[in-house]
Image (cartoon, rainbow, N blue to C red; front, side, top):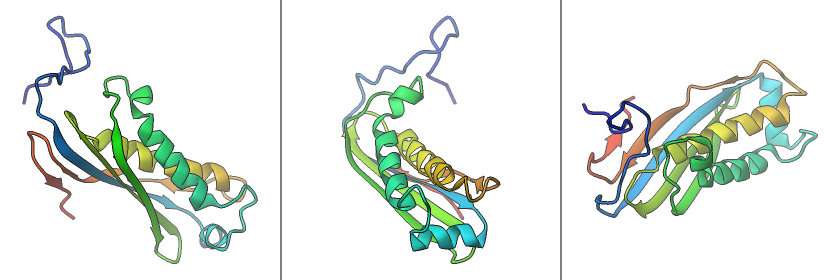
Length: 157
């Protein structure tokens, strides 16, 4: 496989997508925050002193997806057409975060989805760190993508 992020001198470059087709593109990513049962219970009961953890994490994830190209040097700034972040848990000690990001454009939104769940997970950590410092974030992974010349991808479980 040829990597396209390098110029003739072997230096990093932002890939030229000028000639690529505009297509509908979507990507979903997920992450997990492992914590003590009491921490998850406090989040669900709204008992965290900094506020509604999931509401703040959701907004943080959305904002991060929109700013991905500000954080990841070779990412193109994209006009995102949709961002959805959802939360679930195992009723014990794990909080699950999933993000789906959509656009109509010349390049995919995998990095935006991964950034969204990463920042949402970091926000959960930040808001709960006074209660528990040893929370574990991850794994964080791409669960699916659609659109573009490389076609669709779905993570095999």
